[in-house]
Length: 200
Image 1: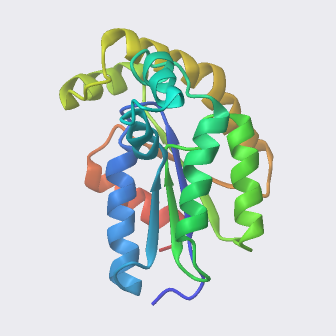
Image 2 (image 1 turned 90 degrees about the vertical axis):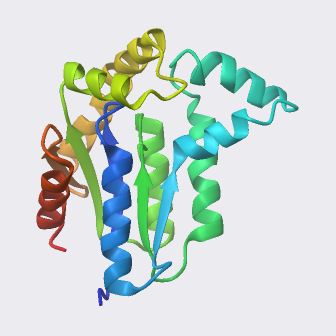
């Protein structure tokens, strides 16, 4: 049984394995505290769900301008996606796992506000550090509909432009617990390294 709730965000290039590690961590935390004790927030899934509602102009634009092209989704939509999950899912003592956010400084600031609002102090930002070539190979293997060569190119570009400065922000601010993990290992070894670094 874990008394103080854990809170994690997962950051890294597209294809670095954030989803797989989030799921393993959720399974571990729920194994210690019971089913439903870990809230898993996947911003990308919420945005893709929105994009499927073509009756909304916002959804059509999201599809055309972001998901198909690989351009960065507007901060406002990403923030809407995960804050909605927070509002509906956070309880007094459940663990929180945020997969794929923050991707930009504004998102990082908003997540800080949310964790502060809920009185969460045990917050870890897990950076799965992989090379562009490694991530590119992984995305080609998984064959997701939005993993076109052009889309992948745009996602790598916004990683350098937006995500890297966010990682630097976490490095410099002692308030944050940034865990850098070598993502170019087996899924099991990456998970083991995360668990050890977080003291689980």
